[in-house]
Amino acid sequence: MARVAFIGLGNMGGGMAANLVKAGHEVIAFDLAEPAIERARGNGASIATSAAEAVEGAEAVVTMLPAGKHVAQVYRESIIGKAPTSAILMDCSTIDVATAKTVESEAQAADYTMVDAPVSGGIAAADGGTLTFMVGGSDDGFAKAQPFLEKMGKAVIHAGGPGAGQAAKICNNMLLGATMAATCEAFVLAQKLGLDPQTFFDISSKASGQSWSMTSYCPVPGVGPETPADRDYEGGFAAALMLKDLKLAMEAAQEAGAYTPMGGEAEELYQRFVDRGGAHKDFSALIKMIDDSWKAPAGGGSISPPVTKLD
Ligand code: NAD
Image 1 (cartoon, protein in one colour):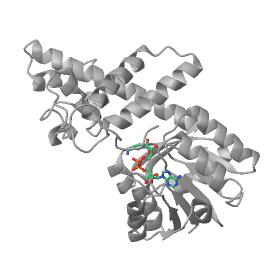
Image 2: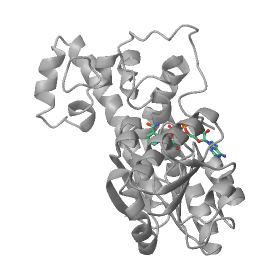
Image 3: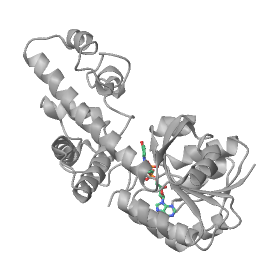
């Protein structure tokens, strides 16, 4: 059993902190939002009055925050210099590669071991302890983080040095955004050409066009396994979060000088969908904009803020 500080108890962090408690750890939690604090208290965490108080005497620190600016601020103001240097620092938020690397080098300069450990899997996986962690950092950092991350996930993979976890996460999600957009287009075109969606699924899911977006997360209701499409695109992975990840990928591509036209198209499509009120819908609901059946929720137009607070 270890003393673990957990900062950021939102949709994802709330379930993750609860799983650390279930694993027998003493969790000292902090969030700015009262409902998040109450949920963590109910799940057996002790509540600190600030992030700096939460990390006092911690053997491990986990952060699960909205974006890079929150991560940089919390580490600079409340973790580095406040937590014992023996504590393993794990940032599980999805943030830009550049900020991840900067914060990790600042932590290292102050004698800490830190890893970036973003996750794949949504709120259900966070609650159920079945997330996949992609870890960036040294071998030593990975070895120290792994026992904690294993309590919150089904797979913990060492992606490489600092920032490599974030790089893996955004490349994966750029691929996911682009394949989902292409899958939506293919189903819409197939239907316009007179093909039955189930028949097209039966063919394409066994042919060279198959992808996870088609076989595990089909955007057409009633086709393939049960997906958010069967629940009017509720639950699942919000389009606003897909847009966030695509923006991070495009930013990274620009910095790295990589040519990513398909990622750019996907970003533009998701931006349009979010601007038309789709932010809270599962990202596979993009098909409704593509087949022109999308009706923005009452109030119409752009809605904000989306599911998570974006910059
Ligand atoms: P969320 O907005 O529900 O939770 C973030 C929490 O951080 C909030 O409770 C907020 O009050 C808290 N917070 C913000 N600034 C803080 C500060 N300075 N100190 C303490 N607490 C602070 O977001 P989420 O859905 O839990 O996502 C968290 C991260 O996980 C994001 O980076 C997101 O991109 C990533 N992610 C989310 C999902 C998903 O399905 N929701 C999936 C994979 C990855």
